[in-house]
Image 1 (cartoon, rainbow, N blue to C red):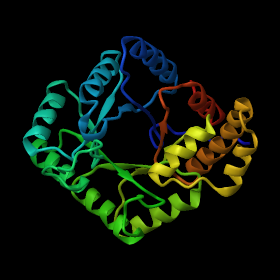
Image 2 (image 1 turned 90 degrees about the vertical axis):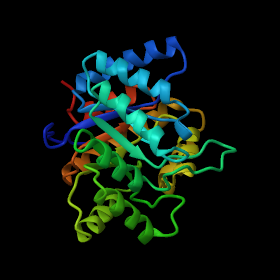
Image 3 (image 1 turned 120 degrees about the horizontal axis):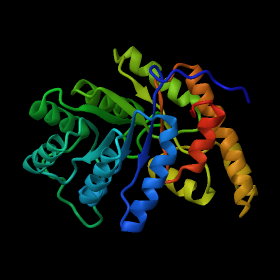
Image 4 (image 1 turned 45 degrees about the vertical axis):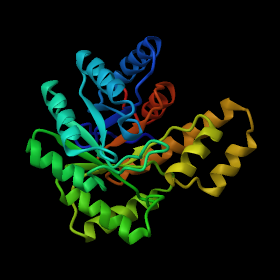
Length: 285
């Protein structure tokens, strides 16, 4: 493959982590963070469990990243929450000088039925703006292949438009493998009058069974040709990683060439595959 010229100011990259549960896990994640730092990321985001179940872990991970001199963005989900509860979290974020948030509807923990005082992410975005003004850069989620719980593509697009119009600054997509889905989604947004950045989410391929499980849950379509190729390798992890590196490097290259406003990598708390992709794109220092 060819290498894609990269402009960090025009096309920044960022990385997603999830909170670890042990001190040993935190040490390993710090090593991953430092390895990825050679790519000069705009920020690291940190996920937030269903119903805020990893709230403390999210804050601790964000603090560790910021103490190391990097920018960090906690995820914040609203489902099952109260306005007072969200306001208290925002106060903590502001006190810790956090200025970026990934605002999400989120999922209720298993067995819970009370959706709380927020039903949709646009309500969370509007609340953040009302309570904190322009303090936070707010990212929201986008689904080029349609959210799995959406009634149809049009209502899903409208929900996204509502989030952006409520005060979001930019969006990060669910990962995808078909660039046409992203480009068509962008076109639909532009026709609706949206011109804010929509950054494609990138998922490295290292384990087919895990990828298939993730994709079933989040509605990301694995193209038939790709799933068949990955299935054919069975337990041959090296071949799966080699094909994954080729496919995702090419997709990332095409996205940058098409003018994507950056790349957001779902790292799964690993660095090797993400580094390899970015080195293929000549992003590493």
